[in-house]
Image (cartoon, helix red, strand yellow):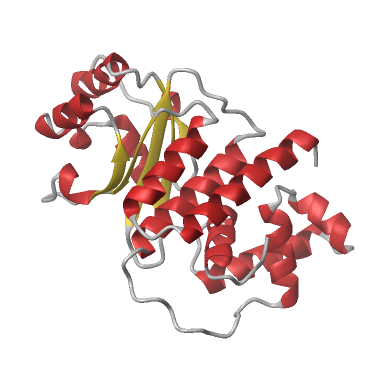
Length: 245
């Protein structure tokens, strides 16, 4: 692992440790603002995906948006035509805003959303669709004018956002009772190395097993934790203290 990649992993772990100690949504928001700010993100919203009869303001979990943009977005009911929200419903993979395709000619309202966002300094963005085992769908969307968003930083940002989303949902709930760790020793090792930014091939070399076996352990861990991808499995395992970083 390169030293810079290691630095980003440390930043992500430091963020996770910080929000584990906080007790209110406001404290999580403040921690997110500080940590995401180091990557150039100025604004973000954490929301569940609204159903047909739900208003956007009813499903927002947390936000750090310009107040004028939030008022405009809700007044115009932009959530129904927002290309970013639409893509969050269609994929489980993180994406940059320009990857949320729409037809400017035939979808003028979609174009309007993206253009008006720019008016509030939200020119570039990165979004993470979040689909959980309980059937909920959500989105963590962040933006800024000058983003440090590349192959080195995206894994750390992804992990931080996934963990923050779940932490916000967990605050205020009754704490889980102690339970036996469902992960095998090898599954824990694989997730620990994945949390450190290692690829399946790297992990295979470190553990002296095949890459296919690493993938098998990862898939098994995802199934046990109810996660839909490796990053979510890592976030769940850390939060439930099933692995230690």
